[in-house]
Amino acid sequence: MLCESWKAKLDTYLDGELPSEEMRAFDTHVHSCSSCAADALARVQMKRGIQAAGKRFAPTSEFRRRVQGKIATKPQRSFRLTWVFAAAIAILAVASLLTTYLGVQRSQREQAYSEIADLHVAALASSSRVDVVSTDRHTVKPWFQGKIPFAFDLPEVQNSEFTLLGGRMTYAGQSPGAHLIYTVRKHEISVFVFQEGAFRGRWDSSSATKELSFNIATWNQGGLRYFVIGDASAADINNLAKLFKTTRS
Image (cartoon, rainbow, N blue to C red):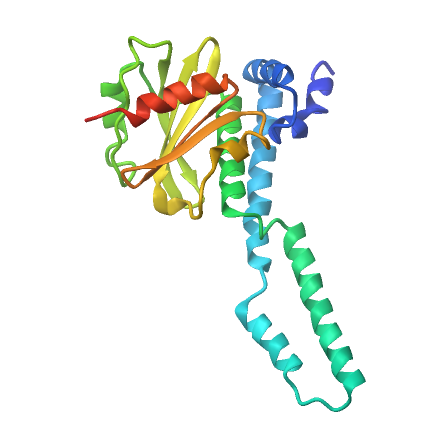
């Protein structure tokens, strides 16, 4: 019964729509409550499953050709041609509405931000956030060798306000990547690294902060796509991103 008030807000929490203070309070509760953590993981998985299933219902090029073929039939009467044209437009409109309802035509940028936010929340709700536990980048970096199809560098943070907790493997769709977790002033920040090919389209991190309760930074470097996300301040997110951007082997 004590968790009912938390669970009533769980969907809003997973959508990142709670005020920052409530998000932090919810994070703290999820870390200590196995029941709410399990519910959070189940709902994140269901959300991603629905998004994946919806992709099967996108209108095909064959469907569009059939509609265009009906529109191109020989005209008999002006009224009949107008009716056929209106019917075809209606069919396309209904297909478009269904596609929009299922979330199939969300922009790739929005899909990626949503997926990255889901991965971050799922990690916060997990009882085992990392698979390799170490504050030493020279221990964490080699752990990924042979597990993901690319190499990346980690910044030295010993003389900074950030602390490395460790890392784990993760996936964006079918693409494997690295998930690193850092802390700063009791806030946990996720750093995700994927091959750029896992995401398509143009990126603008400033637009994401308007839609998510998390601050986020993203950039491409050396053929890799980096995401830094968390409920820490935008300054902390950007400072950690700068450390990664200036890291050299």
